[in-house]
Amino acid sequence: MYRKFHSMFFIVCLLAVVVAYPQPTYASPPLQDLSNLAAVLEVTTDGVEILPNGTTQWIAVSGRSGVSAGDSIRTNNTGSAFLVWFEDGTLIEIEPNSWLYINEFKGNGPGGLFSIDVTLVVGRIFNNVNTLIDPNSRYTVKTPTMQTSVRGTIFGVDVSPRLETTLVVNDGSVAGTQGTPSSVLLEVNAGFWVRSGLQEPFGSSLTFAEAGNDPVILALIAGGQNLQSGGTPLSTPEPADDTPRPAVTAEPVGPAATTEPSNDNSNDDHGGDDDNNSNDNSNDNGNDNNDDGGDDD
Image (cartoon, rainbow, N blue to C red; front, side):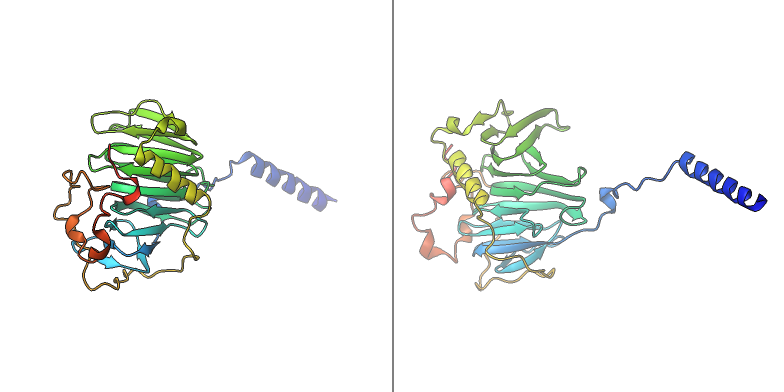
């Protein structure tokens, strides 16, 4: 009898201690502790180069190559590619005459905690971001005049040779900020667009109907709609090694003469390098002014 009472008393005391003692919480790991990830760059038309992190030589690539934080990607007036972050469809479509830098890509994979941060120096990209399940995940696109953050959406970004940024949202919403630190915040919802320049902060977002005949906005709307309807890579991305795959062409696309975007090519869509067209002479005559809408503004 005494033993039973003693056992029951001990169990009650133990339960009381367990309930009263605060239980540990297992928070998501800090972003700085997450592993660095590799994305798949899938070239859709020739004219794509990679500048691997820590190097100074641009490498012309074709097919599929692995890229990661610190790498740069650029296209000439014919090149285009998909930058596939995850097989769930989170990707960037890179248009001709574009230059993209990967600031950060780390995390636990799709559905988990991750951080994607890129800078569009010049050119045009379309983004397809599946809903970020982990509230601490980040997907950020920076330009010389704007920074965008999303939770899951389809949107296009264009940076002209004059470093004017145009943002068009086809699905979901995008938070745009300006200034250092970011002092101007604007939420751009689906069906709206906004534009900003170096000396011109963005104002209120405008509807697609207010785009008029602006070729850049119309091209961004059309490209986003194409991505929305399934304009994704033709096949599921395969794991890629860390070595960029050389292009079939013997000559490189050719790096720019300077790391600064050129502002004197007013007829080029995004200030593309004219000396990079040695591989495409048969296609470039008379077509330099027709790339994805052209920045005639």
